[in-house]
Amino acid sequence: MRQRGATRRRPQRYSAFGLLRHGLRHDDWPRVWRTSELDRRYDVVIVGAGVHGLAAAYYLASKHGISKVAVLDKGYVGGGGSGRNTAILRSNYLTPEGVRFYERSMELYRNLAVDLNFNVMFAQRGHLTLAHTDASLRTMVWRAEVNKLQGVNSEVVSPEEVKRLVPFMDVSNHARYPILGALYHPPGGIIRHDAVNWGYARAANALGVEIHQNTEVTGITVRDGRVQGVTTPRGEIAAPIVLNCTAGWASLVAGMAGVKLPIITHPLQAAVTEPVKVFLGAVVVSGSLHVYVSQTDRGELVFGASTDPYASYSMRGSLEFTEELASHVLELMPSIGRMRVLRQWAGLCDMTPDFSPVMGTTPVEGFLVDVGWGTYGFKAGPAAGEAMAELVATGRTPELISAFGLARFEQGRLVGERGAASVGH
Ligand SMILES: Cc1cc2nc3c(=O)[nH]c(=O)nc-3n(C[C@H](O)[C@H](O)[C@H](O)COP(=O)(O)OP(=O)(O)OC[C@H]3O[C@@H](n4cnc5c(N)ncnc54)[C@H](O)[C@@H]3O)c2cc1C
Image (cartoon, rainbow, N blue to C red; front, top):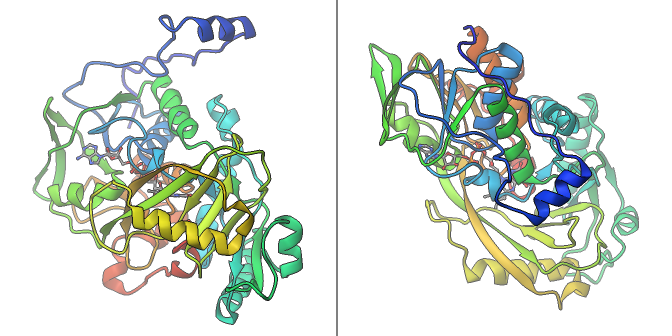
């Protein structure tokens, strides 16, 4: 497909004086992306303005010259999981397919600030997954070996090494859940999720992509097994390609095209404390205690856990979550007992049976999916966007994502990532 009628615009750059002036006066702040009239026809309609939809739009325009693209969202940019996650990036997964895929995303993330000309605040501070049982230590050894074979820096370390990396961690034998070792992944880290979303939105828009917020897709038209376009409260839109990037809502949107997905939506909660002096270097995950923690550059501790056990579309936090979280965190780090929790929130996670995503074609021609991102999809945004853009542009499924097709559930070719993705997102 050729690019049609795209207006190219350079993202705004600021001088030090310009920044100061904009800091003092708000009325002339330039928009990060332009709003435009909704057209009746696009080459590609992307449903969902999270990191996946925005990255796919950006790579369609930047790598393939396809910019007659509309990204539609029923809410606002980053209003789904992409603005609610705990922003942990890593590639130390369990299957070779998973490790290769997430490592490509890490590669893109490493250059993203330069690529988008936007500071995404990627801090590679190391990622520790603690083992409290012999069984989990065995899984860590397995993961480390798979990682190394794929060229990913990952190794099992002793409790003493854990203590060296995180000095206030209780690694004694007196702990209720003694630490037997950990999987250490030095390239892992955290990023600023909003900056990634805004950076992709701005760069895609500068290349001609339109972003339409508050534009819900309420129907998908399919004729003779082929997608024709979408219905919104702002009218019908024709498009030969419709890409579903709606994560927690993915099965509802796929249902509009008559496509059934093996996905169940669960809420996932997180919480953040008041800021304190920075003392925690690495990201720390404990599968047995169902908890993980990192510290932001501002000094807040960000906590997460596994999904709520029931299926729901609710994005409300619960008291049970905070209580349970606090008790588990204090098992690991008794010394932070007096820190106060500042706020908590929840997002929706589109869980698949094998804890791996679903990317590629569907039985409806032209209707593509980039979904099933569960609790781990933020880190995947760049690689998934790049691969989906290639699929749209060439009509061929890139090798990197070929294992993650929808057909695998019929064919029994699952990509089992539960051992590496249930708590450590
Ligand atoms: C608390 C929490 C912590 C997490 N931590 C991590 C982490 O540390 N690392 C990690 O990699 N991942 C993490 N995740 C998972 C990650 O956030 C998601 O997998 C990822 O953001 C999904 O991105 P997306 O672009 O596919 O979807 P989303 O960002 O969810 O975007 C989907 C968009 O679709 C829109 N939409 C839905 N229905 C419609 C419709 N009918 N019409 C138009 N628009 C529609 C929604 O409004 C939404 O904006 C976490 C998730 C949560 C909730």
